[in-house]
Image (cartoon, rainbow, N blue to C red; front, side):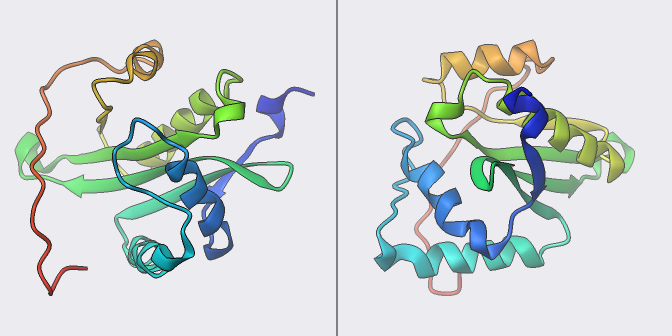
Length: 162
């Protein structure tokens, strides 16, 4: 049996959190300062809880032989544009380094798209770091098109942030 036929996608659980954080911490391009240092685990736990409690967010874990090997977050946004359309944003897509190129990422994105359709999204969008040329080709092979320019601005976090 192939790896693709054995990977299972499900909603992430709190037990998955260390493995999910490890996926992000192993990303040299991401620039998110993720770390497996336990001193920061409370912040990851709080974020996980927020995502888990949101009706518009879903954190997916891809599991192979009992190990988390991939993840993505789905956020649904209802907009006034498009006559009240619902859009899906796919974020934080990661496949464990030793599992890349084995078809898991494509199955993960397909799984996310199916969930978005089931929840009424009429489009899916994602962002990818400009340095990730391999990822850009991957998304284009899946049917995504470069259609908009993305901009980011880092904000100073205030005391009332969640």
